Amino acid sequence: MNQFVLQHGRSPELQLFPHITELGAKKNTSIRLNSLQESATDSIRIYYVIEGKFEWHIHQQQYMLYPGDVALILPGQKFGSEKGFLEIGSLSWIHINIHKLESGEMIPGRWSSLSESESLTIGKILFLNNSLVLSKLNEAGRILQYVQSELFNQEIGYGTRVNNLIDELFITITRQLTRQSNPARNFPKTFMQLEQTLRQNLSHQWTVEEMAAVVGMGTTLFNEKVKSYSGFSPINYLINIRISEAIKLLKKIDASLTDIALDTGFYSSQHFSTTFKKLTGYTPSEFRKNHLPNN
Image: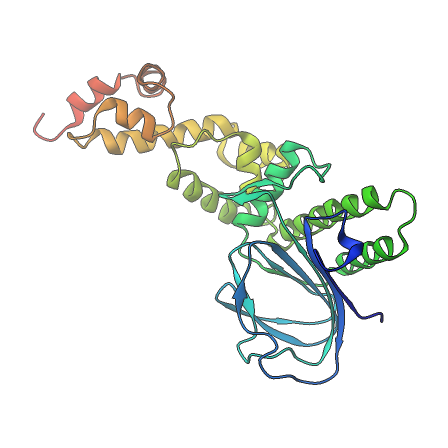
């Protein structure tokens, strides 16, 4: 294998690609102490194991990686070896700066051709997924080889091709994450996890696309699964959660109706009152009056 390390600011091959902070391939034939201390960076780091066995510590969890496996490290997450050194073996990697990736919102930058909705979905899946190692994702290794080839050969259109390959790498990894979690096969568990996520942030104006991304599904499959499991469309399912949470809050005398409306995701107290009466037969004030203790 060709061994190399390209770093932005030092390697002319990366001059057109400020978002690629590092790209490399390495065959480690001996153990060097202190060669892989735990550290965190602001970039997304993707490592592909070509051969060997690597024991890595990623975001406070221990993982064992084998040939074909991919490690995904998000900005701010610590990565390294608990032993402090890189084991014998071969791997390739890329470090990519993302304009924004927080709370599940991903903005790659102008270099990417991903649409806004695609970036949002990918960001949600990357941010909310607990699995940082993907098994047997050989396609990621091939994409990294293609990136290397384009950068070294610099044929016509290589700038566009490299950026498209990085988009393809994100898509490939995201699809594998959703397959590994198998949300469609174990939807009752997935459904409970989704409801917990929604209840934790009910004030957010959730869209169907965002809810689908939380569980790693496309919107069409997500709509079908929610309808089949609950009998409601995703939006009506969400409204029912909002109302059930509002009922709990209405039993607290010190909570104002406006605060309850905003905390449970209604955009106004009037919207809250109208929806609440439609589903319960009471206005929020009437419900509170009839259901408070000693009334």
